[in-house]
Length: 278
Image: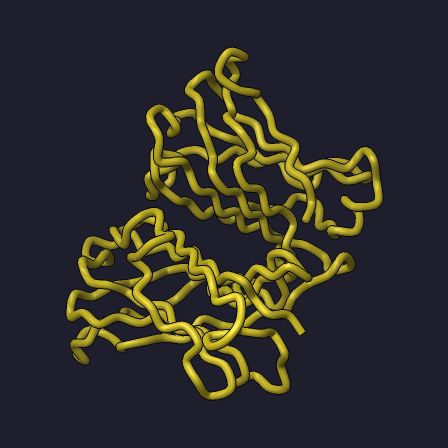
């Protein structure tokens, strides 16, 4: 049984004209019929905003003991579930939501993921629903075949921490290159100061975490293509276990905090980071 020390989420708002909101969206985590976490997402630990086309990263530490404890001891699908909610009439249209927990025993544990949310959120019944569920996923292991990647990055709130240069992720296994993808402009505010971003990345050759763990030649490499320095604060990389739009299992590959600045200018940073497996 895993008791979580924190819950994190990344939520991407659709890019439609009226998709963003000035309201206060909430994350609700329920277990055994009781809400263990029920707080607005625009609070301490938030990076980003609920504007159209933007990603919000939310971090909530949990009590070390006592009330509000959340565990991953499951006996049925209703034992641990997640919902996005609103208390505003200002319609909000989330598109993607990922939720994960962190524990001392297991590190980062993927808990819920929806890649194509279709329901708008509003307290006005003519516009949407007050809340919607985020679909639970199972935790993949070293044998799970990975068909796509989900990367979440948070950029520091500091002068010159953001960049306009593209970054690229490359995953190499003993069989060759599995992922080689350049991240350029998206509808999000990409890699700017005090922003968060979420990216779905294609996999050229499906692979497993076990392949990366067992071979000296295997690596996960993040590279910046330019001299405009980027200073990431957090990098999360998850492997999705199915090629469809609704993966059943998710594997944690990387959880990196304060990896250091990236720049092709050696006086400002390093051109590439080798991201360690969790």
